[in-house]
Amino acid sequence: MSNSIGGLTLQLVAEESLRTLVPELVPLTEIAVTDFGSYVAERGTTVHTRYADSFTATTFNPANGFVPASATSTDVPVTIADLKYVDVAFTDYEASTLSLEHLRRLFFAPIANAVQKSLFDDVLSKVTSANFSNAAYSGAKSGFTRVAVANAATNLTKANLPHKDRKLLLSPDAMGQLVQDASVASTYSYGVSDVIQNNAIDKKLHGFSISEYNGFPTSGTPYTEGLNGVASCKEGLVIVTRVPATPTTGGGEQMVVTDPDSKFSFALRYWYNWQMGTHNMSALWLVGSAVGNPNALQRIAFTS
Image (cartoon, rainbow, N blue to C red):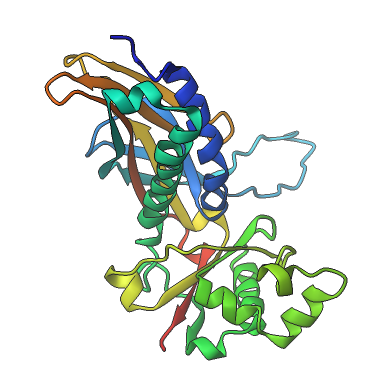
């Protein structure tokens, strides 16, 4: 039996999966240092990755000439903790009538959502007061205003962190509160209508680009501490992904799918279950995360 579903080859499925997935990864790459790769690994593997700290300027001395200096960087060991997957099965009849549009709805979209949530869950689980002691805001939801964003920008600058690529990732509650701030609504509604029409802030606020994310933790320490947002440079969090090895028995086919820009990769497997009479397709990836620079992330927490 050929490794295809309804005449759709695994290669075509892989290409369509990437088209759906890639836009979902953008916010993650803005709040974390990503070490994505197509290298094979297994649970328990430790990957050493690094984030750059800074260069140091040196005064020229004619006696010594120009002396090369290396950028200082910090080593972050990250343990690959979990193997994640999304799986779908089709009967022979379903497979014979399956179209690309059906796969987009039944497989590609669930892959994109599951990958995004899996990766965000992993990094946001690290955002606790023990790991990041500085809070841009901690208090009642009703008190969250533009002032907290300004304070976060000040704190990051005082920590000698770059102004470039600062990100504000907010829960729906936090975003809803911020767009009601009179100064935000008036400033960002003048000449444009995104704040009013789309409940979005499409321009920077105190140096932060802003995204809304409806997947902040609903359990664990971040939840009990009221985590509703992060104001950060990406050096605060580090995430690593790898792919599992190809099975040596059982038949079927596996190919590795890689986004050429972010380098995020996952294994796409197809096999036929003769006993159950189903065509099975899975996307699998390994993931681990760690705290990077603790000064590079400010928590936004609601106590009520």
